[in-house]
Image 1 (cartoon, one colour):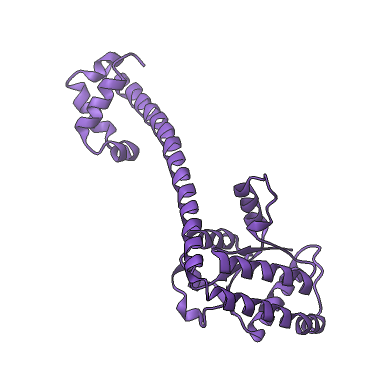
Image 2 (cartoon, one colour):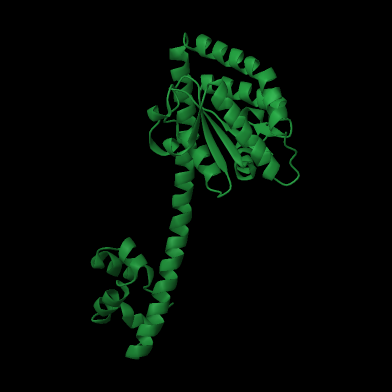
Length: 268
């Protein structure tokens, strides 16, 4: 069963890497994955998108530095969209779930403690049991394996937390770069969507106006050329302005009249 491990920032990345390696040892039928697993030369956006879609469990590695990181929020939201998915926040240097606010506070939190991490493992193991073709461990076997391997995870994560506490400035700089990269990507997508919307908006307006012209000219028994002459222009504009899309694009009737004259000053 595929598990998506989300991170943002150097400390969070190191924790995610350690958690991935550890889970592969404890519950071997799972496939933990983080974005650093992408092969060189692969399109990272497609790989991440595919993994988000396929993963039924998401573990969000939260630290004090990345609580509001856009990438964390995006991946958590993407995984939680499917009704049968589980999203768990993993808290290391955050002492209590009460410190989390916003969308992430709605997810079940796992504190960095032996008791809570065992509960997380049992949740994952149960999901493996429910999945098709998944081979889970019985509870006693899971507890035995957990007892063997948990000290290794505890030691590794404590080492990360201690070493990274001396590199706060470096962490902040890394998060800033991560955030800037994400914002640049989002901005590019937004511009692309605007261009696509412009194309479809113009197409929809053309179709709407053409339909109205046919109806109007038939009712008035006039030529299509006459639409842009008074009194038809005012009357036609008034009728067409009741359309929600036209009203949204041209809230001012005079602007819409100018549009009609500029665009439809020729036969349709």
